[in-house]
Image (cartoon, rainbow, N blue to C red):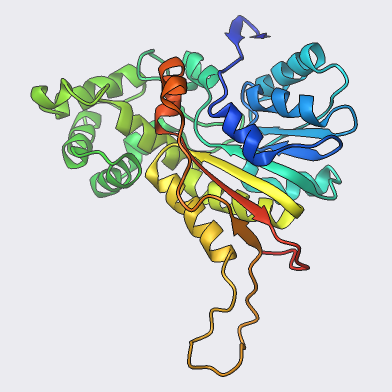
Length: 330
């Protein structure tokens, strides 16, 4: 599906990760409401729409207007009887988006966390360390929020070290942060390839020969910082659980340990019953379980899928089911 934006033409289609597992765990049924909180190329949405049509509703959330255009065109072509409701925004604002759309409840929620391939394929977005472009990395470039360029050129050395270490698990975080600060004293670092050269110069030659592209972890860390991805994930996940109908399924695909840890923590917390000290004779906390966790350990992609789609190599899937409870707010 090609979407044109001025002179920009992008193939807005990606290979959905762990599609068979998503369909098995979410099990969308005819007439249900499904919400893909990370619409992207609509690979998951299209296949779920086939299972809920003609009376079901497919909701697609994305900050990127091009994703909505591509999804609508693809659904019209592949599932012409599907009802599709595109919502432009961030899934961290799930409450506001569903309220504004007057959606009463949702049966299936899907979060496929990370940057979609089309976003990476647009050099101007600044996500790729293979193409030269302004250091942007905002998921929604229309928002007047700080860019990666501002982070790189204004954060202290200590703060840069922290985000590279915590969000990127970068072994050479102190060296990279120090060199960034030294380089920007002469002139600001404005483009992706400028930053790549700074990173390469910070990492010993022997280390650069192993473990993939030397800029991968730094770019990941900056993307998470710019978009506040971890805060957004927890907020969106808690909202999804609140909006899920009794028996509703919530599926999250994470791609690194920080994201997966948040999903595990939220699911674990909301699956607990009484949390009173064991020596109390009666419960006074009033805490009741809201979800049942289906995945004690995260599901991973098959070796066959990883061969066909390398992006699936780091995918970690967790699933929970909303219990039949009157507690609607988390």
